[in-house]
Image (cartoon, rainbow, N blue to C red; front, side):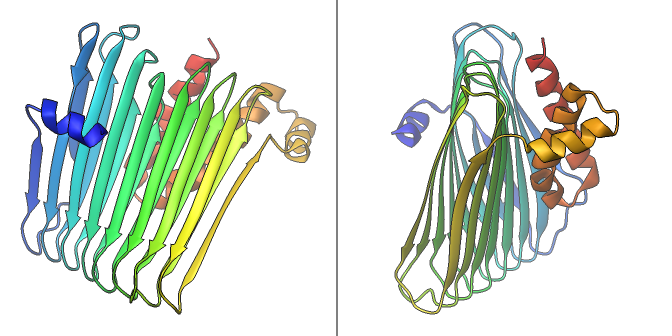
Length: 296
């Protein structure tokens, strides 16, 4: 339904084509803004990375007015050609009166790799769907996400790791930090199609609850239709480890600072998977700004 709404309303978008064997050293950045009150945007990105090419794309979603309500419904189609390497970063920073829907569909061909990292900070309600299809032998997909939610924010993530060809690999790591009365929902499926033997798929979701009223719901799933595969999944939810907190307190670190260090360390595992220091530093800065806004 969301995709149909998007296609009915979309009026503009971005198309990026990377020719064969071209490697872009610097990332391409795309900015989307909600400017007016009750505005709606329907961004679309089509990215085609040809054989043996390499590209990193950062997509920013921001509000000009930090209180104006708005609506966003975006769709991305990402194609990693044979032997290509694609990295996609989403920095979602809508204000907290925006309803946001986003669908990312990635196709990974033979010996190609696609990594996506989605940073969810804004919106009153934000739903993100990430669909990854591994259609060629040797294809790999990494699906990463960080959500920092407070007040009454609600984040809803749905994922599909679809292994179509044999000898493919996927790895999903989602981490959420929730304070106040925030809520997250995760529903993810690893699907191994018939004849997709020797699939290696992993899925892990971890939720850190910073208040008694925060809520995290996780529904990981497997659908295996082939033999000789290795597929694992798991989801955990918990509060800050009191032993870790006590250790930092005994070193003279104030309780609020100690809690902050534990939370940022918890989220750091995801961001560091990018292996691009400048981008990781920028994402850390955005996370710090979100924590600062929650302290107001």
